[in-house]
Image: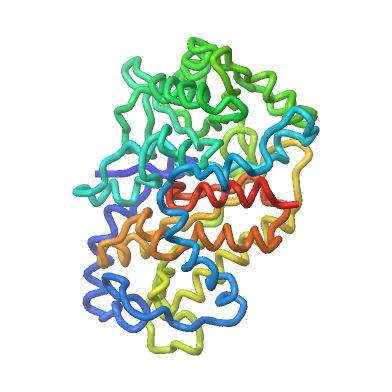
Length: 376
């Protein structure tokens, strides 16, 4: 089996290679002081800079994990109002990474564990705070569905559109974006545009429109008769980006890998991002530095800027994660990553991160959206 993954659709060997890597780990005894199966135990000390960032995350983790929209967090947050002349591309959004993969059932399928980035479909993600979706359609045998690389997801794209329209009818002040990327199959983009038009959803195919499109104008352009606003963005993205966006993809930002975290833990053969991992300062530090660098770039005048605040997959991270019965969802939850993002944004960090892309939005998404909308 060959799995195709990533926005470029290149051959992805990680699901095939993890079996080989597991043998190497077992031979090396790599599950040691650095990464422990099961992830329970003490929360080890880390460097001051990383420790300050992680400290609020663990305490706020459980309260945000329900995935329900809290009136005190979302409804009272700074909303999309017609008095706000901010450009659409400068407005705050949580972008649900590889949104269609949430429909997969990963419990008994190891491939799905490293394919599924969300815990539920589009409707669940909306309830959890996602307002933009990394939407990857697949046109196959005349049917428009979803996919993640070579994994077809047998849910009709049109059904997800209908679910979004239904949700917006009960949330009329909200704007939802489907950011089309990796549209696979001959005629896929045209099929997407037709599927959206069939349900009276407007599209933006020319990214040049975004340089002057304000948030109120976007709300008006996407206004639905049943309530709320909905836009499909189909223009070409920048490097590794969703539609009309610069992706800022960095494959090195993985939850776990081989090698010592630093000189303080020279005996560790692996490192991990979980709160119980003694070596988590390495991946957490890399994540914070990456987000700092994206924020330092500033806002774009012409396109969305993605901040991929999620653990990327690597051959090593899949191998190590599989050995300790992890997954993309588990790695996010046990690392407390979404809660850490919320904590740092509330402190005023990353003022220019506006499109924050996450895995597992139903772990703390409402609090994260409120933090993005409420900052000054």
